[in-house]
Length: 317
Image (cartoon, rainbow, N blue to C red):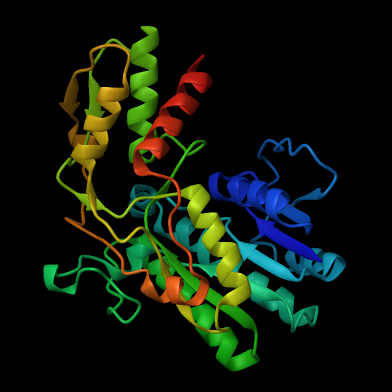
């Protein structure tokens, strides 16, 4: 059997492919954007396709040629602040590509293929305290262009299931973190700065934004395991939250990194790191996912932060 993973050179795509290589015997087709470096997967089971997913004919050709049994669409513009600066390109990368995949599946008559549509916890917007933890019936009220693009992907997954009978399963992952993540994201930003301070390459303090925000953090390695489980056990057309079910403050994250540092670390707020619309607290209710698959996070949060910092220590050297 065969799985197609878009965004194979990305943070989540890389971890998913590593998981599938370790836990399955699938042949894996990974798509890589034309200008991205080619990821060095150490096995002949991974075939890479250089592809711009915004090109409908090219997407259709790849799907028809490989005829995957599983499709996990991870390629995306996933950084919320960029969506404020470039809302249209965010839609191009998130929504346009999703439509091209659906159309390619229909053109190739891949009626039995299982498609994972990756939405986001950002679709819920700014929840009221009484609505926490957020379940899948919580109203969708996104507060950023990125969130709106993810609502659109989400609802397209539902629509193509209802209109065309596609085996789409939608997931709404909350904040997932881990080694290999881009420094634009908060835990990776903190870890990189501390790694540079340890080497004497950064003289100033660790810059930070709002430390009072609380997020539902899950290790990316637990998240990709949830993706695979729900692809096989989820109900077609249904949607599933993915998260730890607990809220952790950004301040607590930074404090943990400081304790892990090998040298004294100072901190300083940076107004440029504040968002136009920030969510005070968000935590998900993952019970629907747990009922369907038995999934639980396995990697302790402190271990995740240690792994992120160790990863950045290697990268900055």
